[in-house]
Length: 355
Image (cartoon, rainbow, N blue to C red):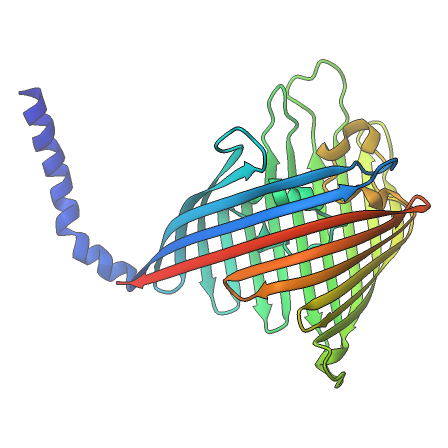
């Protein structure tokens, strides 16, 4: 009797929804079903033996991120899925998992996203000064929001990433970031920045200073191939930027600023590439010995006053759906040269079904 009553009640509740289905469809307009499958495999071996700033390690694994979504009116999108990471050599079926669930608004030059969504969409173009390869490999999601405005090659982006919720064991932490690029014809002005707020744990047993960590890079540059005929060269981009790091530990220190220059050269021809980054000035991350990677997310070699990184690249496959590339990197710091080898394979499959 109770079971029959429950079924009858469910039927009564569903009937208005069924009757209103056509009306709801007309309100939201044309809809599309979105199905995605993203795969990203990485093998990154760093040889930093005897370094006082970095550690030798091998990062290797594969991400698989299936997702299902709905888009309506060509403007609104809701996506839900999961990012699963399997580390090479691990006995576990899945080593790390992250929920993907977000709303996206896209119209004309405006793009707004809120929820848990891929970090690559927001900070994929940030230099390693801000986010190291380990962040890209092991923290694939942003939990927060991002607003951007784009006109051709110029854009502005503002975002927030709430990285850690405060507990008795975990520090509260979040990023507020911004970036922009202004196309000036034969040249461009580009900026990357964020402020990282790193608070203490809940009910700390002893005083733990709240840290504010700001990092900014403003550059001027030019892609010479956009206005000069350089023959077979596909890209020759030269830029020079000013780095400003500002930090404080509230209650224990005043604001401290560290300044430096960062010069970047990028050359591409056919499937080959060469990129060089030269850093000269004051080292960053002055509170590293206290909090380490919890406070700093960038490459630790930028703690040096002088650092040069050279990347040799081979793009075996480079298409909108598939990218396979090999990197051989030389790191000149601490009076020596370190080596790094990396192989990446990325597949992005997206299917749309209009209704």
